Image 1: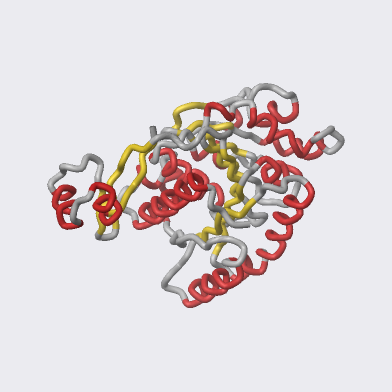
Image 2: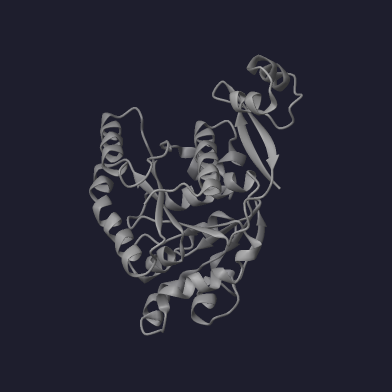
Length: 311
């Protein structure tokens, strides 16, 4: 069973109550788990599982580094797990930042995603890390592109190994490397959808054309089902005119390809939380970015449930 969040209005409609009565119940603590977000109550309800389906896979992809890709993967995975999804995080970056964020020491790992891709070993999975599971990486993955260059069906290697564990999970989030190399292509080839973090800086704005061409190329040659589930503006400094201008330009440019989701603000607490190897929601539950991540997670959950994604 999964948890779904309803607004005061939605809960009142479902139950046949007035909105005032629902607010009174929530304020009195008579709706277990109800949370006040942005002045409105959000009420959790348990609903039947999603229709039986193979695990959905979302590649978190941007060829540029430093855009907050791993931060988004980690924190969004946590929020989706809080909604009741069984989430598998996959570190496909030789820098192994996601692995480190979750408190593991990449250099001490005896088995990683490298072994599954190159040696055909079973996926090594570290379990119950803040309610999520992880396929870790380390620097050995840096040699994988060269070693896979002459391998048969190399682009389908990740898809195959994820398929072997798909019955155990609702969702896999793949943290792709910041490149246009073979590892990134493996991530896109294995995915059902792609989620694109985009920094609200002019240089990042200029790089979106190449990013979209890469997604289109993978869809045309390797993965015709690949869809863009959304773009997430990252490191947004609302107080600067530059960031506001870039966000407006990104929204105009990208909306025709997929929804532009709420912007994640620039915040030092993201870095502080990673030092503590915690999701932001556990490090500082009152941080404004937590509510934005919850909003994005709620929206993705609904979109995945209804399969309403746009190419």
